[in-house]
Structures are given as structure tokens and as C-alpha cells.
Amino acid sequence: MTDVMPSPSLRLTVDAQALAANWHALDSLPAAGRAGAAVKADCYGLGVDTCVPVLRDAGCEAFFVAHWCEVAAVARHVPPAQIAVLHGPLTDADCAYARAIGAVPVINSLQQAALWNASGGGACHLMIDTGINRLGIAPAEASDPRIAALDVDILMSHLASADEDSPMNDRQRRAFVAVTAKIAHRRASLANSAGIALGRDYAFDLTRPGLALYGGVPRAELAGLIRPVIAVEAALLQCRSITAGESVGYNAGFTADRAMRVGTVSIGYADGFLRLRGPGNALHHCGRRLPILGKVSMDMVVVDLASAPELAAGDWLGVPWDIGSTDITDCAQQNILSQYELLTTLGQRLRRG
Ligand SMILES: *Cc1c(COP(=O)(O)O)cnc(C)c1O
Image 1: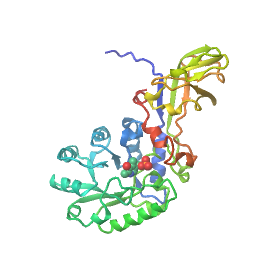
Image 2: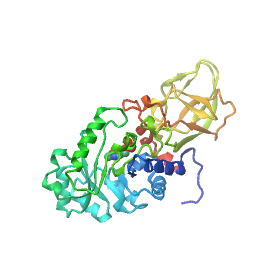
Image 3: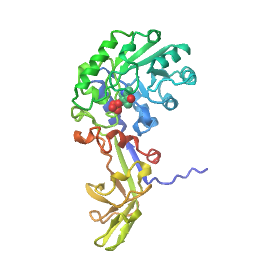
Image 4: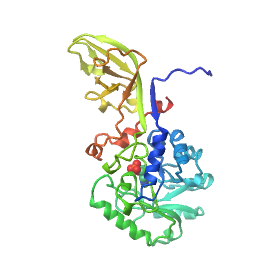
């Protein structure tokens, strides 16, 4: 082992102030309930150790992960009773783990309710499926004795199309309201980031933003409210001159039609810079576009340095990670790469810096 550190050639910067400001903005919207935070998938790729302390210090007291294996990392920063596990328990071992660590399961089915009750019960959350058909009990199951036996803290449901002006939003909201009257609970929660923008009727007691905390803008109403949180930069590893007829990268994906100066940059698809972000896209330096040439490799991409001839190995380039795009048509779910995917594909090497 050594104390000497190599210099990184790739960096992700998380703006902690912007993250805290985004949480505050969503928490203090007049039309919204208190805000929790979806911190699943390592805070959407930004890193639990970076983001959860910021959200905690901002005042957040409800954290949502998907898997049981995500609990321990979050519990290093917040009381485990504030951590909800969205997938719920599949086995007795999951229930035993919930009790041992003190995290709270989201019960999603009658089977999960029976499993939790058999393990000794205690506070849990309950997911109602109001139409997304993924996880949750059906509204018709609300009167089942296995549900009546639960001690429900957060009664929740999840919107399928909150990022669109779809009649489904109101259908789901009505179905949820009907269930809240049938199941005893302490808090009700329906809205994700986009749902918060749908207004007071969708706020209930607690909201569950994820994307918008991290700088994503799922609906135009949030555009003025949400600050960008992340910046991705990669270093130039080498610059070279090529002549007309020479090619660049695997399968000679680009062939020069003139003499060019090109630069090899330390980012590739292993870092989440996926191949579909190749030709047609660009990296940046001080507002100048550096078009990508040829195929994206695992650890490298090559750019055209025509607009920035002074650059040399070691210089940093901006890698657009356009999650705050306010072009909502771009952000719709039929996107080639959604804002969610842009974030959650951020590679491990970026978080290490
Ligand atoms: C991921 C998730 C959220 C957060 O959704 P965003 O669209 O990122 O705000 C909220 N609720 C549930 C159940 C989720 O799975």
C-alpha cells in the first residue's frame, strides 16, 4: 500500500448546494407535502456517500431504496427506521434482516404481508397498485385480513405517466384516495418528481422525488425550480495528427477526408458514455464543440480538435450529461436514453474520481 495517489483522468462533480437546494425547493412547494428522497441505485449513480448526508442535513427524513442490499450503505448516514425498501421482503431472511438492521419494508402483495406478519409484524409501508401493474396490492385487496393486520406507516402508490398530461394521472389519484379511506395509515404518498409538478391534489403527506433532486427535469413546470447538480469531465490522454484517408477507432468507424488534429479522451462506455452517444455528439471545452469521431470504446473516445487547437494531454473536456434538458419531448419515456438512464449508467470509475 502507498499514500501516493495517481491523478484522476475522469471526474464527476456533485454540487452539494444545488442538491440541497433542489430538495428544499421540492419540500417547500406550497402545493406539496414533505419531501422524502429516492436514493436507490446509489442515488441514481451520483453516490450514496456523497448525496445522502447532504439530503439528511437539508432536513430529509424519508429515504427510499429498491433492494435490501442497498440499506447498509444508506444506514451509515441516517437512522435505519427512515429507510424504506421498495421491493419488500421475498424471504424470511429479508424479514429477519429488516428487523436486525431496523429498515422498513414496503409490502407489495398479500404474500409479502403474510410473510411480514408471520415474522412478527411491526411498522411497515404498503404499496397500492393503482394501474402501473408492477408492484403493490390491488385496491380490491384492501380489506384482506392480512392487510388489516399490518401496522402501516406510509400508504403509497406510484404514478405511471406523471411526466405526461395523461388522464391516467387523475384515474390513479382517485383510486389512491379511495384506498386511503379503507386502510389505516399514518402518512400517504403518491408523487414522484413529475407527480409533484401535478399540483396539490397529488401531494398528500409525503412526496418521493428522485430524478429532480439530482437535476433532472421531468416536466416543464419544474424547469425554473431545479438546479443542475452534476458535471462530468474527462482528460485528454493524447493528441495526434492524422492525414486524409486515415481512420479512427474500432472498425475504422471514422475516416478523415483531410489532415486533422484529433484527441483521445479518457471516457468510454464502461463509464456510462454509451455507444449511442458517438458520432453526431460532441464534448466541450470553453463553449467550443469537439465532435466525436468513430466508435466509443470501453475506456476512450476520440474527438476532433479543430475548434480547440491549443489543447494538449492533461486538459479537461466537458462531457455533456444533459439530464436537466428542458426539451420535454426529449425527456419523454420513448427516448432513446432517458434522463434516468443517463444518470444510472454513470460508471463506477466516475464516482471514484
Ligand atoms: C424511483 C421511485 C421514485 C422516484 O421517482 P422519480 O421519477 O425519480 O422522482 C418514487 N417512488 C417509487 C416507488 C420509485 O420506485
